[in-house]
Length: 133
Image (cartoon, rainbow, N blue to C red):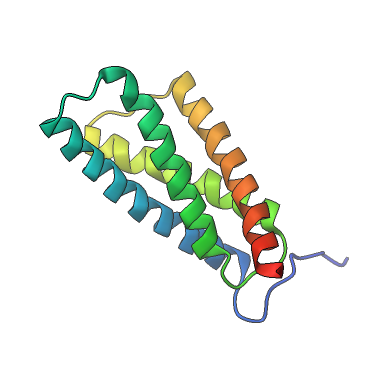
């Protein structure tokens, strides 16, 4: 029985790309959230802006993670981006829950997983097409 495997680029494999992208995205998210927390502490930003800014930070973090993770890939952008977005979202939930001291499994987590996966897939398609030009 022959098992079909994902094509590897000459310089790496898919798991390593996902790991690199996930960790790079997490670093950007941690820095972004830290900067935003300082901004909240010293200014009077309304509470209604906190969730939208957090979503923007997550989106930028996923894009950066996908861009870093896919440096050596010129194909499979949708799959790689989706995996990076999904794994980033799960790892970010774990890290921020540990920092918060509580794990909250609710509808928000499901929305974040869907959002992260979709943004990751879109960013993967964009990154692959940027590298082709």
